Length: 450
Image (cartoon, rainbow, N blue to C red; front, side, top):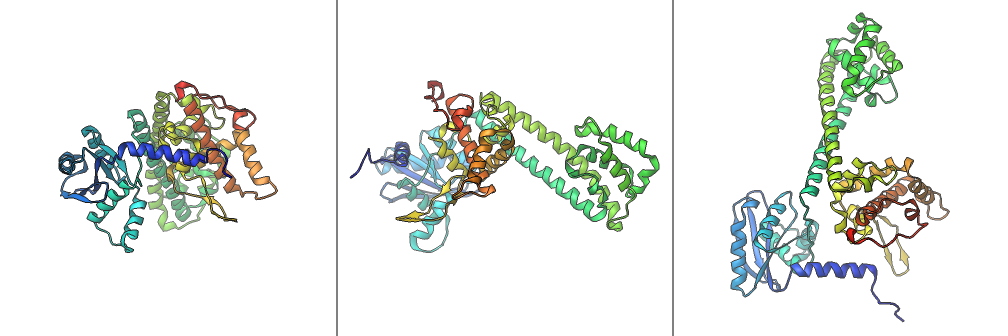
């Protein structure tokens, strides 16, 4: 016998999503489906029975398609339809330009996932044939079936935060590339300095010392020993502030001094490698400064949104860490629940059940990779400073039945961290350890947080 309303939480969320889509994709509107390209746009207008009302190829950029929208509206009017819905795949930046044109003209707008188009292409006639005209029609047909979604419309502040995050991510990749190049160069030409400390490429004393050596050795590190240890130490101390350091570690400086007499490595490669390393260190120092500037700008952007204090209330999560996560997910208030945000990141477990069979659950990895990576890194940094998160990790790895491995437990903690961020930003209340640990129940959200 059925009990309750018969609707699950997933049913209710799905019904709300369908209602929101139906407000845009109304039966009285035609669908303009556009297969976007750089200079060639293929468009098709279809009605809600899938009949093609018109086709057109526009040789123009995405931001120049105002005339195409006017032509499609005319085709819809001739067919007795009173509106237009513009649809496309989220291709690069072009879909944003098309969305702006559709909004400006008063049309509806939605997007179709490229994966859905790919599968529809194969399911259409069981082939993998691909043409722009066919893809445009498949986009329109998916929209008619409501196999689409309403994209995020970020305001200026949220858009700025995401752009800053993209810049910082690029700078971070360049910094890592410098680290790898420096290690490779020294490993080939002169490996002795790599043994000067445990993590040489993360030590400002080591970096300052190598800057002094490469700028004075002229390809032969033994020449620097002629200046004497005291002068070498003084030169390292003068260089240290340029790397953000305040005090030189004598053990590292002494180890570098001893490495100057080493003959290891490929001698023929040493002069060129050390010259290249000197230039690389200059680039590296410049990148570190720009990376710090990007972080400061992101912090200021999050403070401008009024969320910096809420995110920083979670122990172990800095304002910059919160900015990195929020830049990737956008405004958390657009998600109906914390679970939806976790699913957007691809950190939700994918179920494998049928009748009495329970398959092995794995992380879906179907969401936004950059958001997943940001949450994963944040969980690693927060674990030593957040007792609730550490207790969850210990519980998941130490239970008697179905204990998780360390990596699996940290993935679950990353998902937990996203739920906390969704909670504090949507309710407008700081993080509460009692609520986070399940020892207390959260109070109803305030009207201001709606």
